[in-house]
Image 1 (spheres, rainbow, N blue to C red):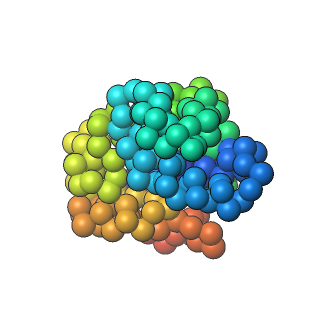
Image 2: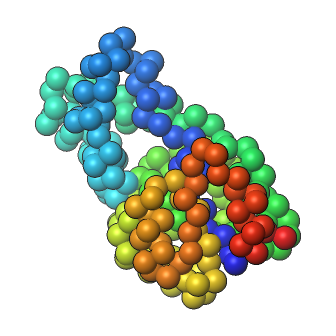
Length: 199
């Protein structure tokens, strides 16, 4: 089995609250903001937007109450990152050291992926890296999985996808690619060994 990693919350911790807890003094107001102005539907839109800053500016116009906070989602986006998940990065590097191909499939805006790629060198170590902002479609849309399969050049059944989103895991399995739903408490190393992906 050849491993395909998601990046956010598999290799890198990501949470909008990492930034916005520094911005809001009122937790309830922050949650209103995250539930409406900067909800995950909007985040998914930015993950394919041709211009991340323009998408955020348009959203700020639509939500004037939270315009200042929305602008920070562009200006200070890097602060949404909570750092690498070291044990999983170590698994990525073990696979590479063993001569195994390693791929990535992740939802990121083009601009935000460029930011994290500069900061974390392991994000340049994939044999194939399919990012939503580069291809114009986000998981769990079946088209992004098809793009991955075409670029990797292997049948889906030979790949093993790791993602923190159950919707993305189910879409992967529906496309014929086995998947692991990664979340707290999942021992990824033992899962990879059990499935024959990690020597």
